[in-house]
Length: 144
Image 1 (cartoon, helix red, strand yellow):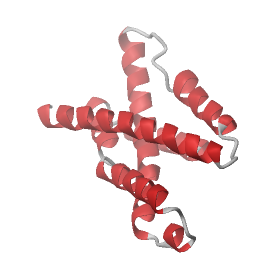
Image 2: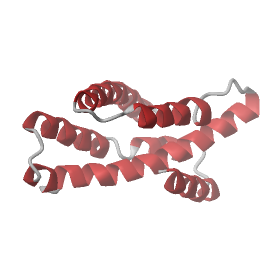
Image 3: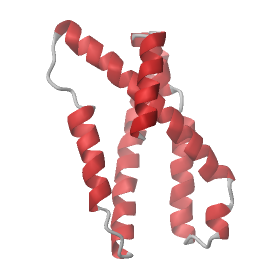
Image 4: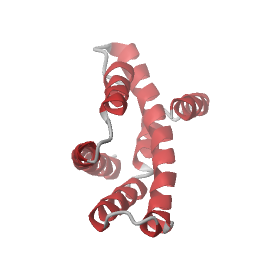
């Protein structure tokens, strides 16, 4: 599907920018004295060991793709909810968050909201199984 392909390419590009922003935020928080290494190690483990490609082939590769898309779709649902909160709730501004960091956090929220459906649409195009969708949503819920 050409439209979905275009959206996925945009999503991947935006996620790369997103990752770079997270790196900058982690560095800023470390400069403030927060130890970001434990969280970074957990995220690296999740992405590399749990959600990685695993070098599968054939039907196993397709099944693992469907599984990962289901997990990503569920996680993107949660991050879209958080993104909406970041955009609309004045709590961070009221708490005195630095304006530059607040701008970055709001950009992050907008990014999450903007592409909230892409992983789900890709999942539905590649697999669409309701049972897998429910199971991966539960797994993502417990993981997050």
